[in-house]
Image (tube, rainbow, N blue to C red; front, side):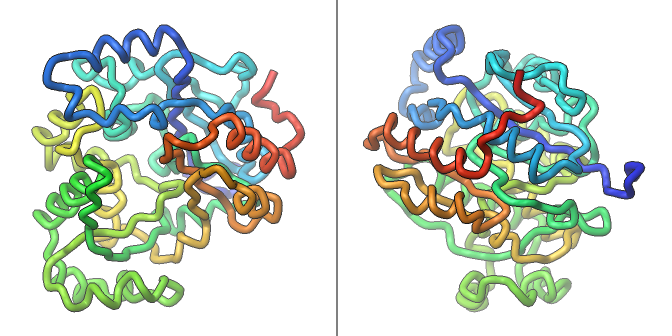
Length: 339
């Protein structure tokens, strides 16, 4: 289907949590104190603390992606006090509106993401944003979907044994193991060589991998993710037991598989248009010196930025002030999504 202006129907989905909500904190604490869970879960404070940057996300969408059909704003139940709930493009989605009751409550982003296809009214083609991903320059629909297919980059890289992180390296390996169950690396390369060796791809991500006959891992751009809703349905048909187990985990665990599997499945089946999407999003780890982030936002170096909160030792209040200054350079005016 097309909109009247001949732009493909593309939705945005964003997930958000207010880590300062006392009711949410109380419920999270109740489940995190369960026996034998404390050593398995990923419950770091930076996974939930709120940088109060959400209004810039909505301002960025209004200014830089006015073509979006609908925005599905997914929350535990809390809402920002400033949000205009009556905006015609806004669909406020509570976890209970789409996640099966047996998985609730959940504090596991994987459980939320693996069920996104169940969001009422969601378009077949949608772009998924974490709440740390922001548009900072005009983007076009065809940067996310062409010919009804997601635009993405099929690139390989080894899974890294990072002993400082006791969760994510296992998840990346789990993802690769699951995909290897359905795809043979050499056969897939022969079947769609243009997907692996596409002009414009970063050179470094495929040359070393040619030496390995088996998949060692996948490079997925950590930015806005283009998805087909039907891909979720297909993966649930293929792996109902595994996904049921993952969604049953109240917190992230190293036994999980992530939604990155869905992007890679789309690529390995040939259901995508190759493009260097790394150019579309710049990734940063927030630190005690965020001058480069502020400068790059001000100069609008890319279509979007991802500001990863990974360091518990930073001066949180100062870092938050720096980021607000950065976004205020280009998104000072209130949007229609604000009261």
